[in-house]
Amino acid sequence: SKATMAIHAPARNAASVVLILLLLSHPVLVSSLDNGLILPPMGWSSWYGFTSHISESMIRSMADGLISSGLRDVGYTHVWIDDGWAVGRDNATGKVIVDSELFPSGMRNLSDYLHDRGLKFGIYTARGHRTCLSPDRPGSCGYEEIDAETYANDWKVDQVKDDGCGQCLDHDPFVAMRDALNRTGRPIWFATHACCDPLSFTPNVTNDWRVGPDLTTSSYEMWNDRLDRATTEEQRSLAGPGAFPNPDFLEVGYSPRMPKGAGFVQTEFEQRSMFTMWAMLPAPLILSADVRPGSECGGIDGNYTMGTLTNPEVIAVNQDPAALPMRPIINDTIMGAQVWLKPLAEGKSSAVVFFHRSNTSGPMPDSPGVQEISVSWEEMGWPPCTEV
Image 1 (cartoon, helix red, strand yellow):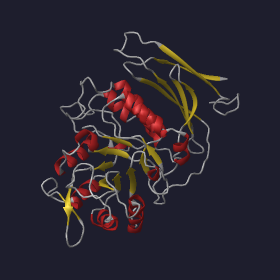
Image 2 (cartoon, rainbow, N blue to C red):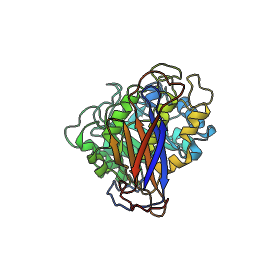
Image 3 (tube, helix red, strand yellow):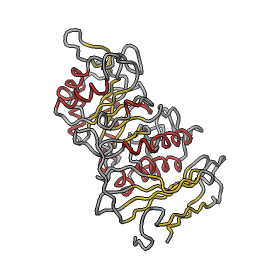
Image 4 (cartoon, rainbow, N blue to C red):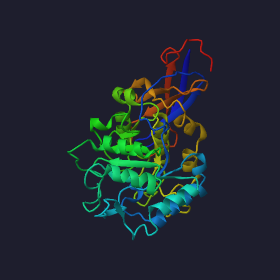
């Protein structure tokens, strides 16, 4: 009558997660942006690991790393160039000008390089007149139509991130960009980041919306805060196929900004917990680690990290075609024990995650303790004689 899991107490500020699959289905209909894209993207972004230190050669090498590591073959196909690539606008056409020193071959050549290798091409802009990185880099305010045409037709872009920096007072810039992208006829994933702006929490405007500020450090406490923001009742009511509250990029693996062995970087155990909860939400699974083989910062080398990122059952939960949000079954704030249930597609299985949100500190003990978390079939809304 009860499902009970005994899970080891975690290391420093870590989380312990066990995910199981149960053979039940729960069909639900949720409205979303009408561009035919319903599953959260998986891939890589330049922002957290490299910020403005980007170039055409680096993006190509990251794409090659996704392929050689095997990440592309398990679903990590989106390659997203974040802020730092634009330098101005053409006075005659209004088109955005690419930094030719950083991207000498141009965006279309880079796009072709990615597409030829079975990858997708993502680009960055901002809703205001300038991007977040620099006052010299143009945003899309007033140029949504031109930029959408450039992205879709000139560069064959597959996803656009519209950041929340700056203001666009004459119109709603997110709606304007959505409409402009839709008019191109190309199915382009549209992601917005306005943090706590209610206008960005609109499924019929955007495919995914950020629910909090940037994850400025590789911090268990910080990503738990973003997880809480993404799992409120309001956010669950908005989530569904093609519409996802986004707690931010994954801090799994290592980068020049977050190198392996640094005292401020999460343990592998904490990273695995983060990955599991992002998959269950479901949220976009976007890495910012250095995915090139033999990276000096640690990258994704190592069986544990790769085992986390390529776990087929966890990825299948994230990419389930029902695309429905998880909901809480148990939330014991004293013991830090949580149980979450995520309905999956009809005829398949439901996912249940047992999450131990510990507040312990200090190094991993030699003999970790055990936290028992129990949940009954009735608490999950199922008959007491349910068979698994």
